[in-house]
Image 1 (cartoon, rainbow, N blue to C red):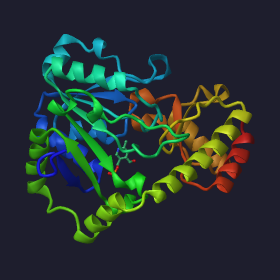
Image 2: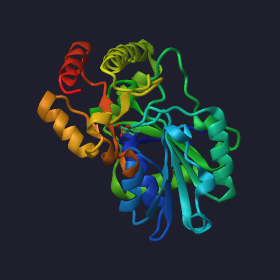
Image 3: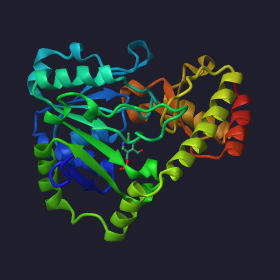
Image 4: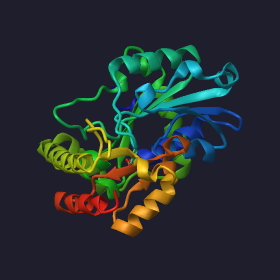
Length: 300
Ligand SMILES: Cc1ncc(COP(=O)(O)O)c(C=O)c1O
């Protein structure tokens, strides 16, 4: 990457994703966004005055959007396509082939390709997820968002960065220059150190989440709750158990909190494609997760 033109620090990757939409979407333009998704992926487009065309991702389509299903009229107005793997909330991962197909699709329809790679380092059992920028031709039309929040456990510090196509990054920089003055210098210095010093802390963070993942997935599976073992992210995505399938994800999340004290995110918070699911976050230690599983066992 050319550090002058193809890299830009951000006040967290979330900020950058919102700004990319401000930079490129006018009223009536369409953003193609998977559903479910991390909320700024669609809310950012709506705030910028654009429209969102949602592409369902689920177990049936291997959590990959079906680009061939997008109608011609939508494609005429589409300006951006966003993908994000390892994925929040579903914890799905994508192959190098998927990125190659997405680049072909974006090029064919003249779209800006946005990859949110926030969980690039939060991976398990030796899994290494592909970067969009490994894909041939990706830098001609694509940008990739990175976050220090997860990799170095720095969410409150607010620092991330975007890499990729220099012209797209220049537009993000220009819009940002009207909104902010950049990142507090000590935080930038801390981020430089995090990126250049020993990466042992990243290994430790991975191990912490992997152990929590194992405890939660084992516990839920023993209770008969069907969940996949994620290869990355700090989330476990689970469909509402059959005995409660009459409840919406919001109702079920409230019910779970009231009856067991366990907090999960209702799938609907991630868009319509998240209905029928809840997201567990591996933010409590193993003991608390074991306790949470016992409490959940009392209502299943
Ligand atoms: C997919 C995804 N992108 C971006 C972010 C935000 O990251 P940052 O703290 O760098 O703004 C999150 C945080 O939860 C996320 O899950």
